[in-house]
Figure (cartoon, rainbow, N blue to C red):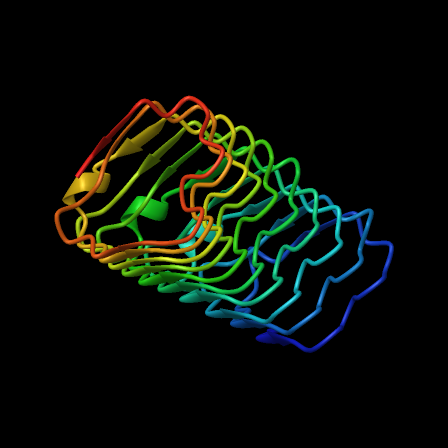
Length: 232
């Protein structure tokens, strides 16, 4: 029974759907389904543990069925970059979301189960340019939010922060023009807000900063034209 699909195994192929549910697959190699533009749906087995970088990059994938039932701990860099992904449900085993993992996924509207994961870091540009994503709820384990992590998510209206968050990178929410709610931000342990972190968040009206704040970076709230109140 198949346990590994190696690097680039089906890259650029004409596959439309693939059902691996009844296999014992543990590993999906890097670029395994890269540039499979006709591929819309993949069903993975609960035995899946690792997925390589760029695995669905530039593909037509809209959904990975049963992904929440796997024990994948890391979504590697560019895994779903510039794909047609509409929704994804994360497994509770997830610990890390790497650089540009979901960047430039213009149809991504729902990211489910993030708050139930063990994710400690969401790296640079992880969800940048996901222009239909509407809300985010961070898990209690999250410590670091990378640079440009959610930049240009223009439909994003609310972010629910966790109390253990320490770092918000530069440009993290830049260009999130619909962002109006930063729930629980004042309860975090963030000491530094990166440059341009909330630049152009024109729907922000009222922001309460945590009492751990030491540095507000350059242009951190620049062009927040609706911002009326900052509570220190």
